Image (cartoon, rainbow, N blue to C red):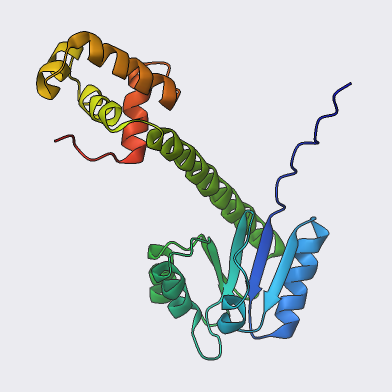
Length: 214
């Protein structure tokens, strides 16, 4: 009998907490642990930055007022560095302009201390769901890119023209080749891209943001 390797378990989600108040960090970690969520806490944004990036779904519970780099400035720094992690802001000194600024910059939620435990748990779940969805979409795009990279230069040209709505004979005229050759190359492109229909191939091209054919 052939033994198969067990399926790889999905990486458990992690909630990161950045707050200079140790009692707040301990309290939030205890709350998260009570519902089976893994967490890590940090006293400053700088401490979080030296931590290796998470491998699985994650979110950040971030205090607005921190020593050194503020929470809002840290949000912008992460964005500028291309670090995509959903953020839940917590503060004891929040005001409406600060809330609007945080939410416009992509924050999931803005909670004023003291907040209800359930409000934080709901925000964490929403943030983790958002990150799971982002990671899933990035994985799909990565797989599509691998398929596209497997095409020959001519198959890519044919694909780009086909998804623009050109018929095989029009593509042949555009590329100076025969219609039967285009038909074969189109079929090859469909097969390598794992597209079952032209409509699906068009959607793939849109997701890959392919440049217009010359």
